[in-house]
Length: 83
Image 1 (cartoon, helix red, strand yellow):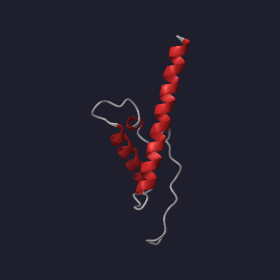
Image 2: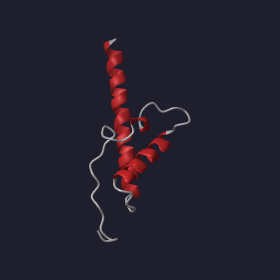
Image 3: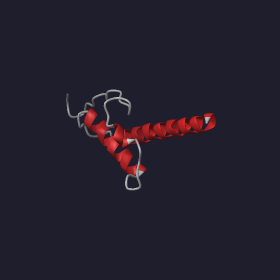
């Protein structure tokens, strides 16, 4: 692969091989920004540490974490409504 070619990232989600601790149970010292940064870093590593996709990785990580948070909130609401 030449220096100008980019590899296509493998589809990854937080449900795949990534560390679930990145998105689960944030603490005060573990702000959302830090979780996004760690997940984006995992995407970069999964891509083979190919540079040039930092914004894409960051936005993808934000989206994944937002979806996870929304799912968690929906689950809590459903559980509270059924109690």
